[in-house]
Amino acid sequence: MKKIEFLPGDIVILKSGGPTMTVSSIVANGRVDCEYFWGFGVYSQKFRETSLRKVSEPRFRTIRTLMERLYNRVSSRKPSA
View 1 (cartoon, helix red, strand yellow):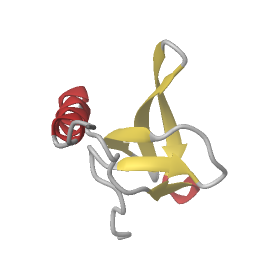
View 2: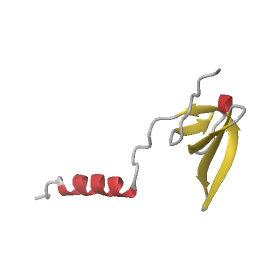
View 3: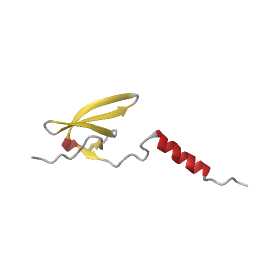
View 4: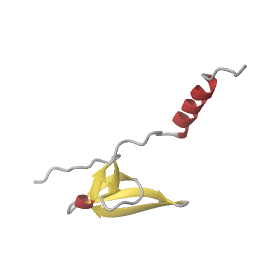
């Protein structure tokens, strides 16, 4: 039996390119169900496991993390004389 390469919650991308996607479930026959954003829509589609590769975690997991980093960057600046 083949080892499952992906787990729900993994961030993946098609080897040929495209948007980053989140694995939502593992389906039979080596298929992986992924969700992704394109424009203003949320889409779900099944892909062959062999056509996907894992990517590193997004730099900013949430808007809150992004805002905290921006606040810390601005508040650490010294006022110009």
